[in-house]
Length: 77
Image (cartoon, rainbow, N blue to C red; front, side, top):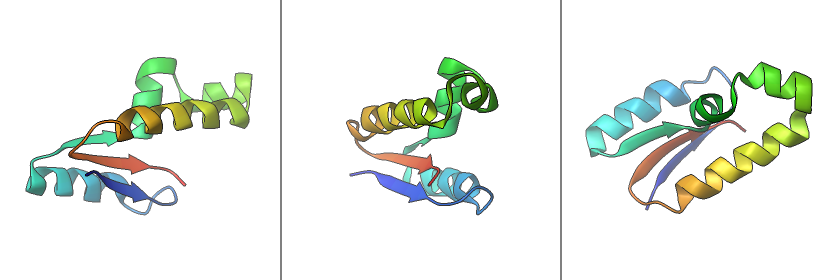
């Protein structure tokens, strides 16, 4: 079972997610960080490929992460 945090930008998903991961001894992932690590800046993805492409990448990352277990996942809305 994973713990997934969803919400708007700036509400504290990262801070809370990291703390929950520490307390529960789980690995923490932020979908935006994973996307940035793999594909570059999110603003560039939006500019050059558009929001639909970003959402496809986001969906792919969420699918990959939810195939694993015992994670804390922070994701945008």
